Length: 311
Image (tube, rainbow, N blue to C red; front, side):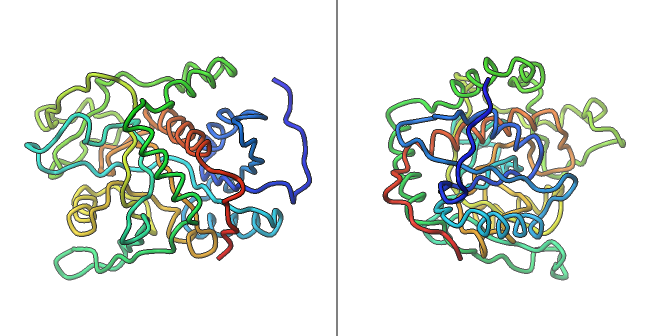
């Protein structure tokens, strides 16, 4: 595949931030020189290797806005932890979050992203506070609304776009295809991971929540609140509190520092359940589903309606 042509910095109007190298690989693999009738010019920025979290993300966003002054819309695309329903009796195979699904930040009251601080806990161990961050630009929020309406009538294009990417880059096929659903295990919140190995083979399989399999294997797109924190997550009790108190359905670590300098939409492919059992088996596929979802979302963004999103 030929290298993309170089354009003047002023010609780029959409900024796409990917924190991890696999997230950037998914972004670059998903986007072609021409990817729709709008023919947006998109700049992809990644965080320095081994640097994750809110501060590095904010620094990259500031640098991108300085270098590309006409950036109008921002996307933060990558992986995150899903916050599943904690009532086993209410789990629906389509509504419940599964590994490989995608969450788009969207909420009328908060704008879709809240910040929390695991470092500030009350005496009972609960989270002290969480607060809403800046809202995304209206143009990208309108595009989200169009995407939701479309998917009431049609299936999403995530599987199609991933298939196209793997055909363009055959080397990716071995590690980037969808893992076997048998490896999508949700353990009860009170049961913690055993041993110091990533695999859950030593964990008590009777502690896995029995969920109905989906009729279709395609990823589902969920819309709701994404909780962004200051540290790596891995405690099921904190995950469940974020859902119970703030209705969050996804958790990640970059948004909190980014929204104040680069208001954008967050798109997260679910690679784990934000508990002690998380591993990297689903990370590449989740990065691909998020990138594919972002690509489809951009098809609903009219260029003439995009406003400058500098904070």
